[in-house]
Image 1: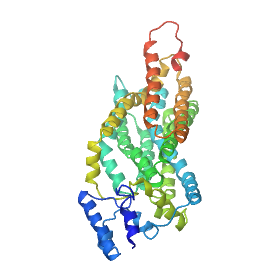
Image 2: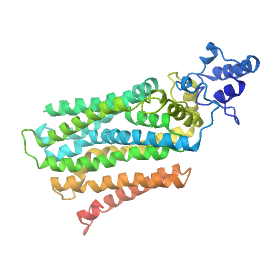
Image 3: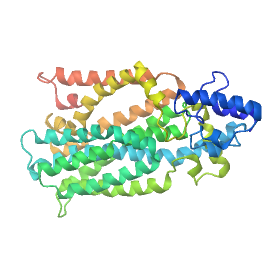
Length: 411
């Protein structure tokens, strides 16, 4: 292999930092790789042992094509094929991930509490126990995402949601609800990390924010759809309790979606049967500039240390903590809150829809904004949060005020 190829393969031309094709295990490997370049400078070849340093799974695909130029026409053609295949599926999965746990807020409008004999604050615990399962499973879930094919993980957890949705059909007690909700939290833990990782495996850094927002909008989009389904189910007949039909429908959709994801969504470019051999190389080369790797199962100790030292890690953790506290409550109590504005159960299911319209629509506004204004991530974090704070402050401030009607509170 020519010296120039190895230099491109291991280091960026300007900063000599590692590219995605190297993914070193430790600082020692950095020194070994530098030594490898010296070896190649002398011998002009890379031995089998030397290639062991290159742990990224895309290396075998890229080897021999590193020095080939990628034209803009090729890039756009492959990008379109990726978008048409990946974005609809990821949007549906991410939307179902939200809808499956949010379904409790529809079921409670259809006498779930009475039918399962919930009393006192038991509904609150049924709501909260989901997050205990989610929190406890976060570390092993992220380990799985790092270690195994992301597409298969997403497919299997999606199928597991379907099974757990079916499990709701036999629930008759508080204990049963707690068990199923806890397991649902465990099964949903890998999804966010898996979807973000999946996007990172196929898209450049500039392309990623738009794609993230596209699939994140699925939460609001599918919530709108299934709110209408819930409204229809609430008026349906049949032998099952009305709230059980919701879980039956969600189970059916989740099982089909998981099965489709398993067969349609490749984990890596070399597995993408819907691409030609040339397009697979292009797909791998497209993300070469990310310098993050496509897939490696080696644990990177130096990356953990970098994350610990980076103050943005702690700022993002605090941001997620403070944003998820109200989000978790509103997910399961939003219908009860709206009903307290003096709406009946049926109307509550419908007036809840504008919330999701605003949520999903705002995602697309930020996606479009991100295409024209670069490096505005902080604004994208701050402005939506300020809007939410204003809304909650108005509801709180007008709680006991005279002359405020339910539609103003809803707005």
